[in-house]
Image (cartoon, rainbow, N blue to C red; front, side, top):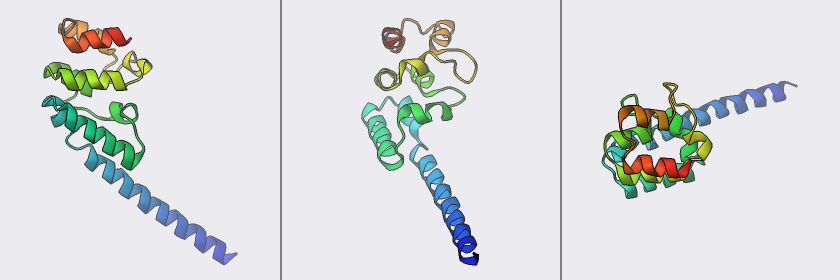
Length: 131
């Protein structure tokens, strides 16, 4: 009985340590993604997304809502910085349901785009064609 309790405690401690390391790694992997999007570096963004997917088994849709670039989402950041290649690539990678869902401020991408006057941008055109 005592061996089972000790084994359970050891397994629990190891699990906590492993999950802590994995969490730190993903933050390191996603650290400069805002800079990459702002610079419109599609190739570097693709590499970053592939690294996160291979190392952590996460796709863009899994971590998109958890990233904020100056208070804006990644696609909004692409629009604000006229990062057409990065913005259109992210729109193509995201599921339609998430593209039409309200973001942190309660506005959908389409509503925000119309409100900010980006409805003529190529990124907005890709968004409208996708949804």
